[in-house]
Amino acid sequence: MKQQMKWDYFDKGLDNFDDEEYEKALEFFEKALEIDPGFENAMAYKSFAITELKSLNDSLAFINQMLEKYPEYDSLYYLKASLLSDLENFEESNSYFDLALKKGFDEDLTYYGRAYNYFGLEDYKNSAKYFKKHLKTNPDDLQSWCKLGYSLYHLSSLEESLKCVDKAIEMDPDFYLPYFYKGEIFLGEEDYEKALKCFEKAHQLQPDDSKTKKRLEKWD
Image 1 (tube, rainbow, N blue to C red):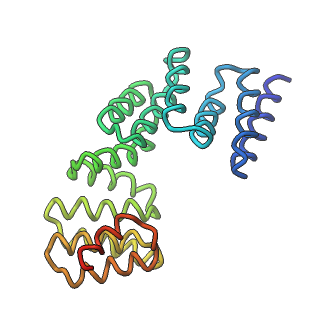
Image 2 (cartoon, rainbow, N blue to C red):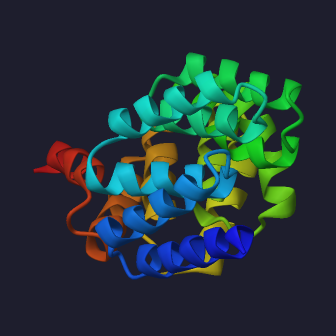
Image 3 (cartoon, one colour):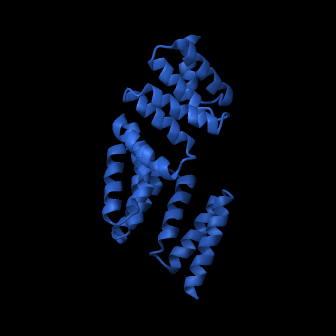
């Protein structure tokens, strides 16, 4: 009876979370955890709700509390790694991805997080390595194609880098990010005419993007 009730609360929490009713969602996740304090799914979504309602740091504090109580849960190390990554604590994040793997977490699910961390650290060799691994099972991830292309450019692979961003454009010609990274690549090549065209296209598609605006200021 209680097992069914905790799942009922959890499912109601998910419905509210999907509807962006985060306060209601949090209430249901907490009710599920009252029945089963070790309910991993509810812990995860409670942390997501806390992020939406408060902050990444508040969510991290909650996950740290859960880790003290349940150090055997591999998912908690993964969640902490992901939060640290979002907070741009890239090296510490990778250390928690390592701990998650040691606890038995699925390695495939860590590839994007690791790639993102290495990209943030400007370790483009490793970011390219993990974006490639991630894209094998997530070939429709446009952002990863863009960042793989930019990583490869820093490894002196101009042709391959352009193939990656062009692939993202082919998949979704109305997505601004591949034009931005293509502009970055041409800017690095000092091909300013092509770079400007790419940044203008990115700005046309996403007028509020601050990075694109900053690049266009160079031509004002």
